[in-house]
Image 1: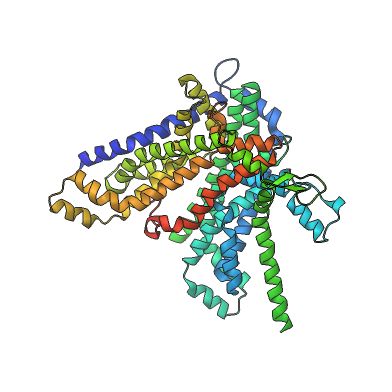
Image 2: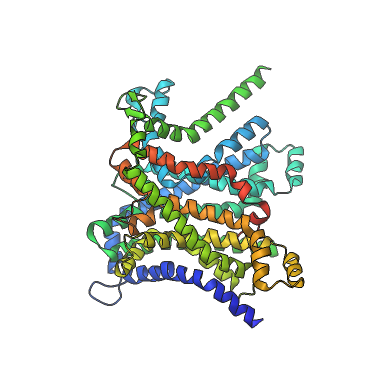
Length: 279
Length: 269
């Protein structure tokens, strides 16, 4: 048995080695560089400088990612909910065919699409003007924080909807049918019966989306102007313009902490639910 | 009767609105790729044509070089990722491993962390090793990021292979290696192919890592799209974006054929 164990470890070792060399090691380096003091030793001077220069961008990043995650959740619930409980077959199949398109579209392509679509002379504004809803002088470019949020939700809502629809399809229909027979509306069924059952899947999808949005460089770079901007752009600027690794890494550690806090909240919720289930 | 009709019209309008939200941005991209001249306040291109398509597909052009670089990097990434994942996936599916759960999570980590700061430090390490700005450096960065797909999917593929078939081959006198190559690997092949496609697409679409590690010498399609888009050359940017869309959309249409439900249900277990 111990022979099979060491054989197994030997087979896994090369892949683990690559992860250690190109993820764990640079991660440790970034934390070490962030807490290094310019005068020598360990200190929080880099964080002080990062907050002094970029506190506005830190708040901007939290704001954008939080709003985008919330909207992603709402849109995904609406799509998956209608796919599961919709009663108009052509609407369900039309929706099912349409909503998947952004799933495999790279962020950089989505960013270029939105750069043209949301511009002052983009298709969105042109369509609103042609349909008579807007006057030409009422149009505004959405290429700022709103553009970033639209791009993130456009890209991530289908992903979360896919996960949710799968999880809703696997539910036992009996409870839903019973509630419907007792006269509950479809919306009430969705909110009070279906959603609590698929909440764990929703949370996993939203947390993955949250981390992805915190990691994407191309969307804030291409969709919005340079001030204010998201942390990923600041990190890149700090390196490319100044070669300032300590402050860039301090910003990096701040984004790790955002992820860690979200993961911690999730784990607390998951554990509490687990305990309630057990009790 | 009128109420039913009004309801149907309302639903049709909702669906049209949704279609516009999903397809509109893509349609705008297509319009730009055929626009030779387009400026404010015209709502459609002023002059249409294929001039920029010719520029992009000119055999000696920058775009063709980027395409060749992108595909070479993606193929090499598949080779590296599979060379590491097939043994790892087999071990995770079939052998007794200590801390198996922790090992599975280790492969997820590169995807579960905000990665820009990681890439910045990888680039710094690569400068010291002479790997910055090289194809090899970019391939390694792409491979680490793609390992979660390749390891998790190959492991799921091996887990679905029926053990009885392997035992039968062994009972008939086949050696362990022969059983592996004539029974286990061929049966796991569709899952391994699916993981290879995932890795290929992940590498083809990757921007951030290439942006930090590949500059200034390695130019892939996403980097070309970025520099053309930021430089205001929307036609080149749009055509590059459309080229990147082709494999993604083909994959979306055929993914269910490659990734069977029994493999899918075991991913990450």
